[in-house]
Length: 102
Image (cartoon, rainbow, N blue to C red; front, top):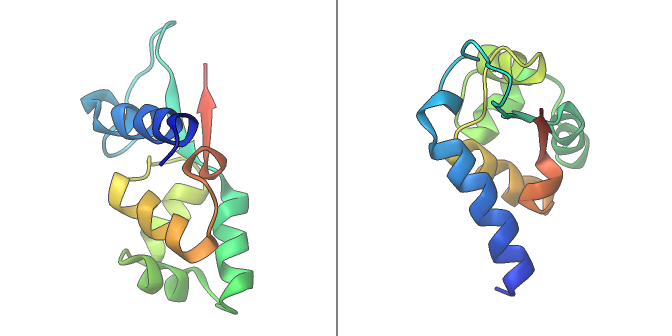
């Protein structure tokens, strides 16, 4: 893995392991950055694999359809495991799967 890919992946993993970024979106302060899943990545995975519902996508990701909808609407943040599975499904770099908010 080259340095750029490693740096990008480690930034995402570090942010995901931060307790403030686990589970549902916590209360934010001015300096907090939140990492959310880009809904376009979910749409891309559905298109690539011809999945007709969030339930089927959730099954492919190892999560529930409700969890997919929560990720899509930014009510929750993705786990590292979900990001890695989505990366496998879409062949998309981790950096392109997430949106970082300031």
